[in-house]
Length: 370
Ligand code: HSE
Image (tube, rainbow, N blue to C red; front, side):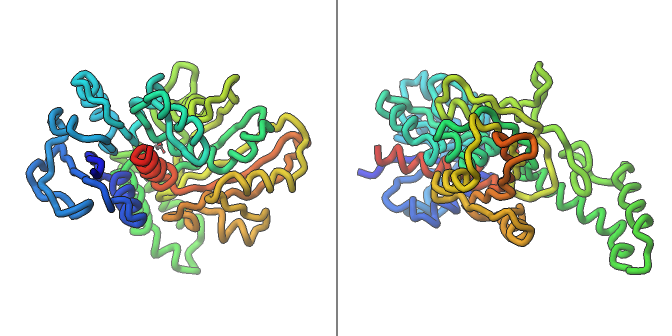
């Protein structure tokens, strides 16, 4: 008999990408999928996983506990409200979640199966039922350099991030484009006029960025033609929570003990849906570059090695090039002048695919086949 799956938050940005990927991979075949809604109960659901059925109430504990697996991209508030209720009702199904709410709970596993399939398998054996997708930046970094970490070569990592608007949310993505349009309206004609002095064009852009006219309702500051070196809320030690997640989540994913030190600055930039990271990696020893390249390349099928040339970098190592793809590009790899144990690398990955939806899609397949 096919397993009963409940899907919640499937219309949002991550949920939509998840559904799209599930369709591409024909994952709905053989699934008995029920779609839940927090706001449109009773309306027809999507025609996926069988004939369309009316949307069920995402707050109906009885309807939810009827499912073998619940997959939610609804967000942390929903998780915090419903997960305890379902467990208190004695429900022992699999809870698969894209939100961060349960990530650091001792009873849950952060899923990134190309990196931690062994951790997932052990958790399944001991009866773990809560499987949570990781922070996008962490997942993308680990996919890119797992080849170095798994060999035990890495002493510490600093990650300087260039995170896209999609990580902040759908409204923020739209606001970025709106800011671009507003800048274009103000300064576009001058920019297209070869005779216009560039400092006049710059001044009209800067005047707009520093005025109250630019739309900044979501970000609280201009992102287009600027950047924002702050993501998520403050921690007591001066990190942002996004920066804190780097070490905390990566080590939980890897079950690394003693923990691998990871820290850096997380920065929002005007990319649409790809997160990039500039990495400084302190190796435990002087590993030759060809060995580093071989280790990175062999870690998983999605890592795409980009040679350290201008041409390859411009063609293959940008958010524009990687958007919409499962590839994890890594390039600009070289020894640093700091010493032979220090290497630098730049990596780019789609924040909505491997950064969010893909680990969730894949853990659903894993638990269904467990
Ligand atoms: N917190 C990330 C960001 C996205 O703001 O870019 C989710 O992992």
